[in-house]
Each structure stands twice: as structure tokens, then as C-alpha cells.
Length: 305
Image 1 (cartoon, one colour):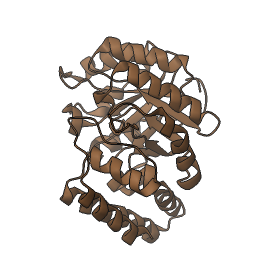
Image 2 (cartoon, helix red, strand yellow):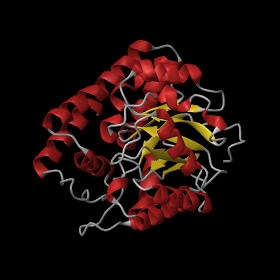
Image 3 (tube, rainbow, N blue to C red):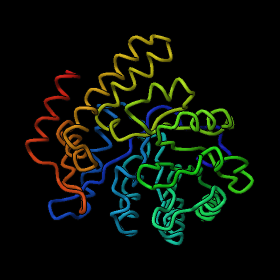
């Protein structure tokens, strides 16, 4: 997919977990079966690789490259979109990953804001994103906003205004925040060839009502088939059904949050639901306890079976 293409990202995009072995090393052998599971069991046709769910900030650049290569290889002909997240604390590392993504045939790239030395203004953030995107000018570029992790609260509308003058390959936003005022402004400003993708799984229905083109999220790994039903219900104006499904998703996530939900726990739930051996998270994240894993799996089945 080149920036000039008319295709745009829509529907559900699963933010993939990074499979690790018992020693905490990247386990590429799981990725093929992982793609099979997403396509055959969850109906997923797009993936977002090496993002927050994929523990990207805990991975080396070399690890992120081999993961990106394997995901692109295994997803070729199976997925409509493989978007590689290339954001790093270092601009040079981000550019290196962007060039690599172009080389291996990714369908797009995304970048998060640096979060140690934070951009204080929209202009500073725009310049960083411009430098990253320029390393792979033929790939569609997406800004990945997630203020709960980065601590960067620059309004996205300020970032994307006239951004194609700086980044001709700009094609949208992964908006992972609860500020529906800012989100609505982004949707209202969005160009026809852009995708505004909502990233808050627990309130996707609100994002759809505001005009989201699609969604990127971790829970679509194991709840994608149910969320697809919700989207279909929304599109056919069956709001009662759509709300019912969204409330079920909220029930599971609210239960998990009260017990201590994080990426490690989420990863274990995906392993238990799918049967894939995704392994533990990498430190400083801690593995999910067996008792907690059992409680969450039981809750999942009580809601969706």
C-alpha cells in the first residue's frame, strides 16, 4: 500500500502481543499459528505490530526488526494491513525501524511520541513525526497517541492540522485516549483518505458514534469476533444489540481492572483463550498469577459462552 492508494484502514486492527519463551527471549515460532488464530477464529484482517500491547519499549531495535519481519512474512496474503509501530525514545532508532519496515513490505508505519524527553508543543511533536516519516516516505504514516503512557497531552487536532504539508505520507491517527472533544475535532478535520482509528476498546461504541473509521486494540485478539458483531449492529442501526455487546466487553474489562489488569495479565488472558503459548511479559512487567488467570478466564467464558 503506497500513500497514493485509495485504500484506507477500516474495521478492527488487533494490536499484537509479542511471544516470548520461558527465558524471556522472542519466540518467532508462535507467529504463524497466531496469524491463523486471528484470521480464522476472530476474523481479524489487520494487525498493529510492536505497539504498547507488543511491549515495544521493552524490546531492542534488533528484536523489533525480527518480529516485524516475521509478522509481515506470515501475514502476507492473509491480512489486509500490517502496520508496524516504529516509535522509540531515540529519533535515530525510530528512523532505522521506519526504513526497515519499508524494506520488508509493511503496509504502514506508526509512531508514538517520545516520553522521556517529551515534546512540550504540537510543533515539537510534529517535527519529530516528520523526521520519522521522512525515513520511509512511501509508507502510509500514522500518529499513535496514547497519553496515559506517554504523558504527552498535546491536543491531537493541533498535531494533525495541515500536517500533510510536513508529512505527505500522513494517513491518520491511532487515538488512544478518552477525550472525545479532541477525538471529535480530529474526525471533523480528517481528510477523506485518512483513517481515524479509536484505541479505547471499552468505549469503542462511543468512538463509532463520533465517526471513527475503525479501531486498534489489544482485546480484539480474543474478542474480535464479538466486536465485529457490535460494529455490524451499529452500522445497521441496531443500537440495542450494539450496546449489549459493548456492555459485555466493559463487564469483563471492569472486572479485570479491579483485579489488577495490565499488559502481562492481558497477555495471559489471550494465551488462555486462544491456546497460543505467548509466554510471560518482559520485566518490569510481572507474569499473571495462576489464580488471577483462572478467574479472568472463567469470567470471560461466563460472559461470552
